[in-house]
Image 1 (cartoon, rainbow over the protein chains, first blue to last red):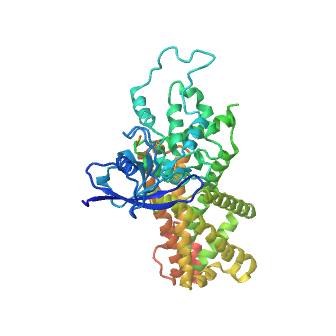
Image 2 (image 1 turned 90 degrees about the vertical axis):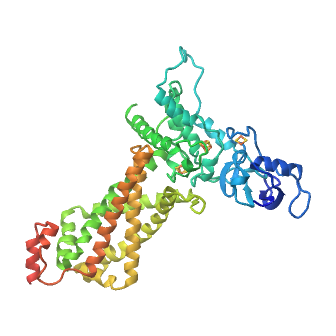
Image 3 (image 1 turned 180 degrees about the horizontal axis):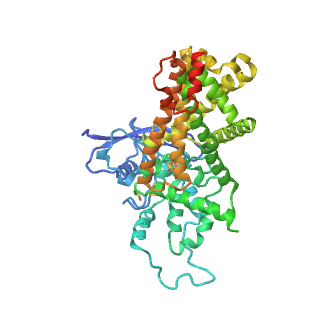
Length: 249
Length: 237
Ligand code: SF4
Ligand code: SF4
Ligand code: FES
């Protein structure tokens, strides 16, 4: 192991500035993860040419791979920087912001589009109505619970969106993560009250049909969420919905 | 939010359907028919070319329907192509390669079909000699090895696009929803691809090396064709 940890970081001063590369090196210490190394660089913001520069900006929050905020491209692979161990990475460690979302600054991106998609698809459970929605707690088959639990672990990190060839700034596609949430909430005993609305919301332009089944999403999801099962299941639900829309009026 | 049926969804479903019927179904039929090239010029001209003309009483309608279906499927396919940002250099997964190949083969197949329809179907209208003996016309074309290369590309592209399209349709229509179902259907579609490609290559081979002469043991059994006795009469003339 070398006595240094080397970084090559793609930087950008603001949303409308052009990106540039900057290299950094710091003394080696065991068990660093990318975030703890970035914290060191924040205290010593000196590039390999010896210049003191503006500290690198990135997002992070939970530090235990559950919030998704710290997601970036690490050596070209989208993953959580808080959970990426420096000792496991080839050097120089190349850090880039996610490419599918607008850059705010350096490694920080704006993932609002993912949240807009959750809103658009009504990916929630209604808790209010003109009637009693919850008389008792709904009873759910443990097997169904198990299947749904997988989907509930989505942290909106955007890895799946990053790897999806159909999702990019110029496409209207909602992307895999929101589709997983539609599948989850359609299976919920109360959530299913919005089932038709959710299905209709993904049957328009940019909806489910814009998925090309490259299946990269399921490969890169750090939570191993069975996204392609959701996509297949929604294929069945939307096909049925189509027949319902045509014949059951 | 739309609360009734969406045009975008229907368009995609029709696009998918057109790819299977009539376009995909025709491809299977077409490859099968032409694989009989091996039985020689007379069998081909009389039974394949003429046979189709007679069997399809409404040839004009059938051809027009097919042409429209291919154009609609192809042109809307190009629209879908624009929305894609392939990333196979970054993500090396089988399905991702197939996703990319599905788009590449759409282009090769579309270009191939235009060229192929011109020099076979349209030439028949323009050139009487071609109309009389399509078999020899094809043989002359195949004398050029580059034409064979083009045909190999055309056939492999089309059979891949159809076989992979079947796999995709299984998912998008909601038949194969889970990973295991999708693995099984991938194997089945792989077999369809190999089978169709073999049949396609067999027709090139047939034009290059048709059975010649009197002594063709048991060809009637091979095709199980009730008109095989006619075939023998043709041969003896
Ligand atoms: S399966 Fe669909 S959503 Fe997942 S990466 Fe491929 S195109 Fe994107
Ligand atoms: S589905 Fe997985 S990869 Fe996609 S946003 Fe959720 S946790 Fe991240
Ligand atoms: S900081 Fe929450 S996932 Fe890394």
